[in-house]
Amino acid sequence: MSSSTPAPYLISPSHLRELLSSNGAVSILDASWFMPNSPRNPQEEFSKKRIAGANYLSLDEVASPNELGLKHMMPTERIFADACERFGIDPSSHVVIYDTQGVFSSPRALFMFRAFGHQRSSVLDGGLPRWEAEGFSVESAPPAQVPKSTYPSPVYDKDVIKSYDQMVSNSNLTPSSDPSAELVLDARSRGRYLGTDPEPRPGLSSGHIPHSFSLPFNTFLQTNTPLNSSASYTTFLPIPELRQTLVNAVGPENAELIINGERPVTTSCGSGMTAGVLWLGLKLLGTPKVAIYDESWTGYAARASSKIEKSAD
Image (cartoon, rainbow, N blue to C red; front, side):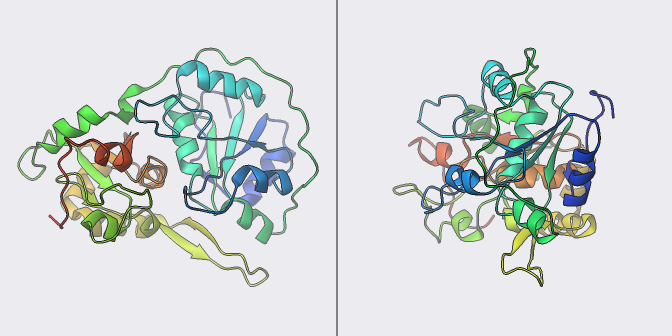
């Protein structure tokens, strides 16, 4: 595979094993991240167990500062390139990203790499728990030092990131009557979307952006519990089921327009993390271009001027 040839969006543990046995340059990143109210610490877990040769990618650290203090916002070109150099990644490296829940934060990391034009990047479907469940070994010794690489200034596709002002402008359009309106897919739980359940971030109102559609990220996933392990993990649904899930959320006509690239689409969530799951699911369906609202609901609802709806359209 040449450096310009896109890698598959998803790979299996056996595929990763084959890549590691080949002569190609493979860089593995653990991009695990947990909600702010979780007792788990991803970096501590990485230090105790990981796929051999992996480095830890902190999406909160490889990020740009935000005026509201929000975490894991898209980095600048230089911040991204500096991180790649620390990890020994160059433009020809096949970057394979995993997390410890199966599929949760790894798609957001993949989105970052693809947005910066690094097409040789993939998510390990099922993550670390699937890797272990399928009999592949892990390591717990201190990570080895990785020789630094050189990563030329990447080109950032700014069209795949939406700002607050863009979302407000779009929310004033009615998708059913205005074909220029982008369809917005909300990856949070249905209760948070409707405003009946609280947000995990204290003091933040629940509800949704006007005219957005509810598509909880976990409806794109399936839970797997191997017979030889008590640890369950998530993977993406098969393509036909992904398509049906999208149809159920937005209707058959909108689904076809999205997949065919005839209707712009932006994904959103609580803070821009699980919006990546919807982004990746849509890419697996062949959607040519999908954007993410980087600040997502936390940035939107934190602003007093935002219009918040609390019922289904």
